[in-house]
Image (tube, rainbow, N blue to C red; front, side, top):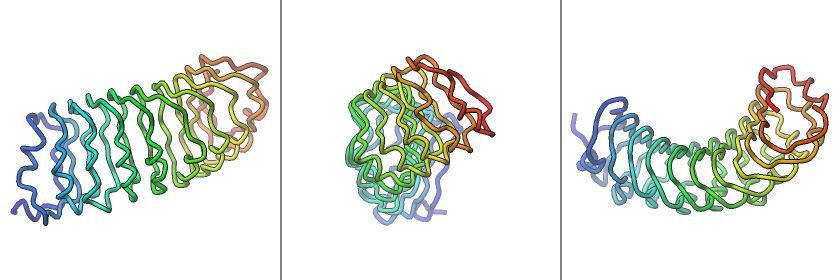
Length: 257
């Protein structure tokens, strides 16, 4: 089989090292490659910057669990309009998240947790209505959540920004994310929990530990969250009594306040 006919290339869970550019040196402009999985290896170079423009059919790229350094390439989905999955978790990537990733109009899964990323979450990413999974935990991200833009993520099921330095309140508009199943935010957020959280009726996990949230928990009607399995609110400044509506969550198995 020639390299020009490969649709899926999966070399995950090996001990490959060197540069990714060497692995992709045979890529041509008519390359039909759709899936590239180099996860769980020992790559330690920077991610190539020019190769992506030639991958017009690329749908999924998984480079998690390596030692990639440098910045996230700004050209990742410029040449592939159907790009849907990007997983860069557990590397040594640094710098800002490029706002050009907002051009990935078909992106569904965007993961880059456990790196050294900094700056703010680009507002352009919040324009990607196709996103179902947005996960950047344990980085150095700052800034506040833009409630006016967040509502555009109407298909979002997972929002994981825990272990960062994102500040401010949880926007009231979060209640419009009706498909949200997992919410993980921290570690520098404050204010009261919005009552609109009760509108996210598909929520299974609420993880808001180690923040500066205050106010009365009874503001949220937990009785509407019948899919809720886990609530973690430890190390905040919440007051009042445990609201009775929490006991209406019939599927709740873990509660930590």
